[in-house]
Structures are given as structure tokens and as C-alpha cells.
Length: 78
Image 1: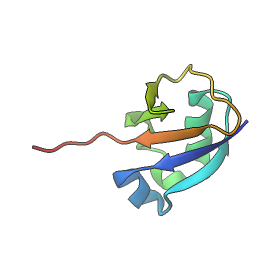
Image 2: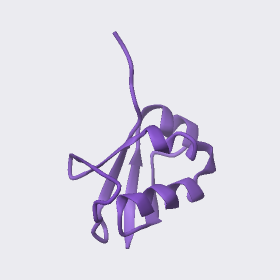
Image 3: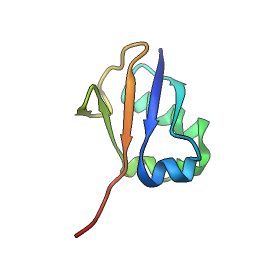
Image 4: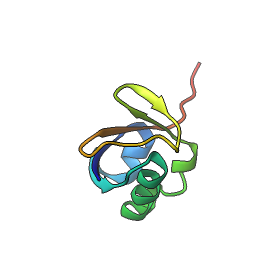
């Protein structure tokens, strides 16, 4: 299953791209494929939340072919 992954904030800056395509049938598979496709962000992905259709999802969630997956890094502020 091919999915479009959109990156935000520090993850996007570190990756040097805003989005890319990877293969995966679950969020866990997408996370792994993303780490392999973009090694500069691999160590950050375990701290990121993933969302599909504006809803946060867990690693076991299925991902449909052609879905858009958002990678949301942790943020802090005051």
C-alpha cells in the first residue's frame, strides 16, 4: 500500500522535505518505512504522533492505499 506522508515542524526541517511516499499497511509499517526512507529523522519517529484523516491513530491502525498520513512531532511552548 502506497501512502503519502506529510511532515511538520522540526521533523520536516530535519528531513529537508515536506512530504514523501512510502509503503505500509499499518502505521507501524509506515513508521518503519519512513525511518528507512529518511534516516535523518529515524530517531525522532518514536516520539511522534501519527494521524490519518485528522484523527490520531495507534501503530496497529490499518492504512488504506493512497491515504495521507501526518507525522506530528512533540511540541512545547508557553
